[in-house]
Image (cartoon, rainbow, N blue to C red; front, side):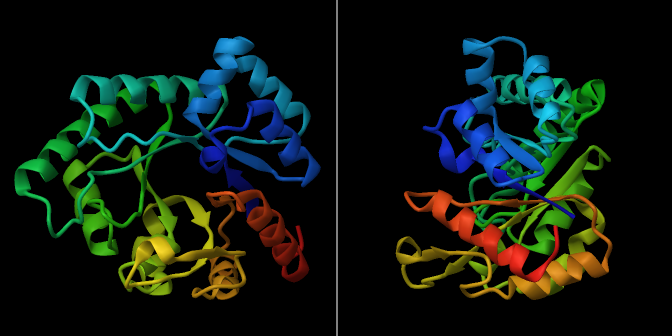
Amino acid sequence: MKLSFCTTGFKKKHIFDIISFAKEHSFEGIELWYGHAKQYIEEIGPLDRLYQQLQEESIGVPAVSLYTDFATQDERQALKDVQRALSAARQLHSPLIRVFAGNLPSHRTSPEKWQRAVDQFQQAARLADDYEVDIGLEIHYDTYADTPEAALAFLEDVGHPRVRTIFDGSNLHVNHVDQMSALEKLYHTVSHIHLKNYHWNFDNWYLSKPTPIFQGDLDQKAFLKELMNRQYDGFVSLEYFGEHAFTHIKESLRQYTSVFSR
């Protein structure tokens, strides 16, 4: 199991500052927001140069992250964004791009919207075949993959092996879904994992407070131990947002290394 962190929480930071942070704290990977890849292309040049730079520091890119959800964007624009991310992932030797499915809870969407997203995922998966990169559907509340059952149904409807899942137990906790039972159901589809923790306010989500991984509502020690028992050898990305994001990542890393060897 390897540790990385998501750069989506640091959109205003320069890519070089992010790389310096990864080096300073000995991260094995950076889950790269596409906006940072775009910044590098515009300011420096081709991404194969970034790949070489990261290789020299023994830093991998487990995923290139988009916010495309195949519902709120124009269909042509969504596929164009996917193609750009797939190209970036291939240049960075990343196995996966991150996307979402829809912008409504699975039980509230219409059959027509669900099918429209399925159709676009199928097109995206055929593009992914050309780049030899997988598409990671993030498990997330307020999407068509907000429960294990909904995610599995969506994957079955898409019916393409390039479409995998990115597991996030905190996103399931929002809907009172137990992450351990969810992992059991979804594990065979999982290619990547997000890890964080919260003191979640179920009455007012905006009052929820992020915490380092071994504080908060979820027992992330037990979760990580379960991953180790399953011999999971992929990346786990620490994911935090807001003004204290770097602090939470650094403290999460400290807590992790105090319990598990790296």
